Structure formats: C-alpha cells, structure tokens
Image (cartoon, rainbow, N blue to C red; front, side, top):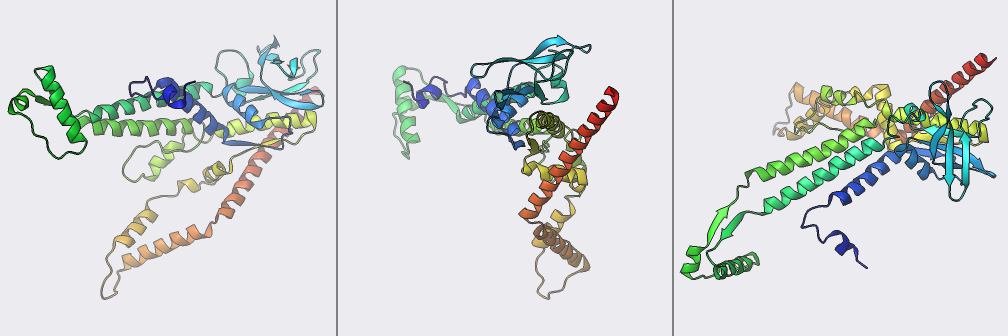
Length: 385
C-alpha cells in the first residue's frame, strides 16, 4: 500500500497538482463559510454540521419527522408545481431512514409534514435554472486558487535556474557536472584542466522578472481570497496597496458587504422558526461572535471613523526626538493628547465588552427577523379569514 509520500509527492515532476490543490481549497472555503453561522438548540437527532454543509452547497434541506425524532435530510424538490412553477414537495431517499415525500407547505389536499429550509430565497424556487447555494462561487474560487498556487510553484522553480552549461563531449559534461556538484556541496575551489575549462560554456538566464512575478502572484492569491469573503458578506481587504489606506478606500469595499451574510442568516432563521412551530423545538441560528462585532460596526457607523489621524499621531510622537531643555511646541502637545486619548479608548474596551455587545446585536437581529415573520403570519391569517 502506498504511503502519503509516494501518493502525493512522487510523479508530479516537482509541480503542484491541480486536483489536490482544488480539493483542499474547496474544503477549506466551505469550512470557512460554515463556521460563520452557529445553530443553537437543535435536538440530538439533527446534525448541525451536516445541515449547514448542504445548505451552503446544495441550497436547501428539509426537516421532517421519522418516528419520534426529527431529522435534517437532503433530497430534491419535485412534485406538482403551482402557478409560479414552484414545486410543492421534497423527495427523500435515505438508506437508513427510508424514502419519504415531504410536503413542505399545504398544497391542495396535502398537509404539511416537513419544513424546507433554504440558503437564500432563490434556492426555494427549484426552477433548475441556477446552481444551488454557494457551490458555484466556492468552485470558482477554489479553481482560481489552485491554478494560482501552481503558477507560484512554477515561478519558484524557474527562479532556481540561474544558468545553462554546455560542453563539446560527454566526458567534458561529466567533468563539469562533478565540479559543480562539489562546489554546491561546499567546496571553496576545484582545479580543472585548461582544455576542459575552455570547452565548457556558461549561458546565464535573466532573473530580473522572477521576483516581480512571484510578488504579483502572491498579491493575486490574497485578492482572490478577499474577494470571496467580500462576496458572502464578510469585510476583507482586497486592495493590494503598500501605503496606508484612506477612509474612502476602506468604505468602497463595503458596497456589497452588508447584505449577503444577513440574507443567509434571516433565511435560515425563518426556516427554523417554522420547524419550532411545527415540532415544538427551540432551534435558532446566529452569526459567529467573531463576525458580529464587524456587523455591529456597520450598523452603528463606527466603521466610518478615519484611520488616518491616530496612526499619524502615534508615529509622530514616537519618531520625535526628545529635547534636552524639555520644551515642547503646541503641536507636540496636541499630538500627545491625541495619542493618550487613543490609548484610553483602546483600554476601555475589554474582550468581555466586545462579547457582550456581540450578543446584544445577535438578539436584535433575531428579534427583527421574528417580528417580520410574525407580521407575515398575521397578514396571512387575515387573508385566509
């Protein structure tokens, strides 16, 4: 049986394999998205990681009962469509639980016996025109990252080749190669016959572009990852700029950040609220606390504060030489006060305060979602009456 070294490291001719890198980045990106959302209060029969994975990749999953327990199951939308061509049932074929046609809404003579949870609103249509969930985005990003890693690997290998050596005969080539091996091994010198030295020619290879190529590929790699997180609603710097960013450049990255992750969160929560009403559970979904602080800043407008003055103040104070006479100008005093204020603001906010504020924001988001769902129910009851 082949070990991991013979399986992955041999037969590649020193170049990274696309398939192996694609598999890694696809799993890595999927796991990053899954870690953004946390399911609370699910019964033991429901595997929350399984549900999150298929919601992200497939776009929908159904929760229904088998016996006395409820399960989250994959399957396919089907059955008779309504006037908007939306299917009314979900077909399950589970090897352990068995097959079942789940009616995720009342339709004609069929009563609801399960709940369809969708990643976003478009995923519940089931019209077959689009791929489900975020599969296409993850596939696209994993492909770009795998290709870019191969490009970086090729640039590294090409950068190691500094020159080609030519000789007139095989014996001269062997002699020259032995000398090079000895010198690369650490020998400070080697004596050769004059006729061999005259027959060996060195052809240098230009190296000016390799360092720049690797730098550009590394920047592209970081940009691809940042653009992926921006696409799902998580702020990430995708500006590959060496200088300090100004406020307008930071705000320009937030144009399409504020919707995606909250849209996914609200869609999941609506589904779990329906599960709670149908089966008497208490399941909820919330953002990972690490991300809540970021969203709280977006809602409160704190992210729009300038990042220029504090950093400049600290730099000017730290770089200013100390005067022997202990005399300071008014500008130095103002800069020192700004630096002190910045330190005081930083010390005031402890990790516990951040977590407490994060929990409050999550509760506010859930309350908004619940209020929206309740208003929809009231309007539906009035229409039915």
